[in-house]
Length: 230
Image: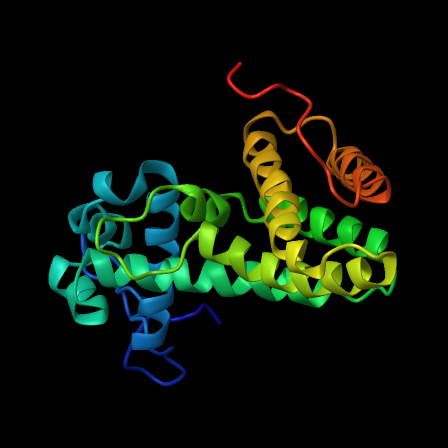
């Protein structure tokens, strides 16, 4: 027995299939407020990484998210609010990584872990790192790469302070040396962000080579050899 026409009313007739109206696009699944917020943060992160704060506009954030500008304002109050959230997340992510990595007991291993962690973050979270190293907007109270490096330097200072005491160096100078070490790694990381070679393990090994061998042969009271006035 042949099938009846679709939707036929006779005995054994099939159910009528819902056929979308011609030209009508399928309805989009609505995001929850939390999902929309995460989407906007992700888009803002990418735009701030690509263009920096000043060149990024709420209009473009809204356009990429396919929402109206008021939706962005509703979540963040403006571009400054979105930027603050993006940077705060990156600051915490990088600091958490470095803090978790500083677990070894030997100072040289700690240097290696810190260098590898920073380079790993640059490699895996390039957009986030670009956001951090760009200039913050004027009058912004938001943390940035410098604030993260200062926090790391304070942790390194405690490590160096203990080492200096055991070796007979002035522990008050630990802060100076910690800033120098962290600054060296940070600036090298910014350079490596663009060149990406040699590989991160090689970069870390050379950084530690310079830092560790320098620390191993510190003079207790270094002086300048260049005469004054030159």
